[in-house]
Length: 452
Image (cartoon, rainbow, N blue to C red; front, top):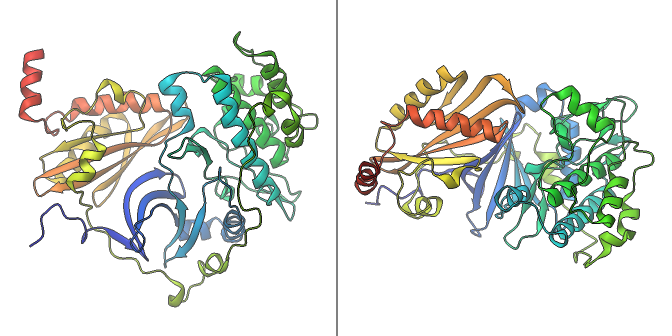
């Protein structure tokens, strides 16, 4: 008989992929870690709800955008490998990127040296330019713009930039009859003035503004436009009202002034940036296969209702986790150490418990409701949403209970949406309510008694 920690029979499978933990969540979609069973290759799978897509009349837009994304094969852009559909869901199989978010480097290590910031900015501009050339932002007068938000700028294992989630803009914005985008979306601090002012805009020039904000953050360690009052923030962005720190070089200031030009008609273009002296220092053009033909049959098959086009989806069961996974996710072996100092800027935290899974779910619900959270439960997963809007909208938290052994569970608490600092405040309150649930090793308990 197999050990209780084996996970081969309890994982959910979609086609040739074995699904793992959730690594991202939004209104229309969630992203899960997965593994190709045939090759062992790790991937990320974005899962869309077909019903929501149909309800919001987004089928054509999503088909067009996924098709466009499949044509993108660039070293600084997350690849789409394939698209699958079941009766109720759409599965988009993506390259899995392991190096975390670019801006986490700022959070953890402070502002970058100019040479390092320039390297990432060069990769960013290369990727944006390539995507624009392949029709990501403009096709048939329907404008798509790349969602250049902090959480979409990732790093691979070698420290190279990877843009993710630039497509599927149909999920967060709509196009009117004049062919221009009209819905302000994304994190306001990064969005161009013409997007916020709802006058219609060209996706290419709006993307460049976002690139400029990102370059400023890399060099300064903070945002150029920041205010707790949304109206004041919009006014600052509309007037391009910001000041340079003293350590910026003159060349960097000149370039940023041209990029953060509130008038999209006079804003610098990509071709002008490529000729800029500051930009060209140490510049290495990306090496990749320019001509790339993608098979789009799977994109068209996704929305067909016939059974022959549906991918096989095995029923979901409570996920088990083996000891190796647990150790790789834990810092050291003191599994009871939930809220240590190094968790301060993280968007996810974990703890272990010897309580039954149902009891853990009930305890989290009991702790979350008095803190003003609405609770949705499904199996051993929960979605918590704060009814009151915070600095970046309503804070959303996802939790999941994994079985490590018959009598031991690991609980993951993750920020799905909202402000990171508000998330930390929430989980500190939550931890106080869950003290009786969290398992602490005897060694750790003795240490706590000594400290007391």
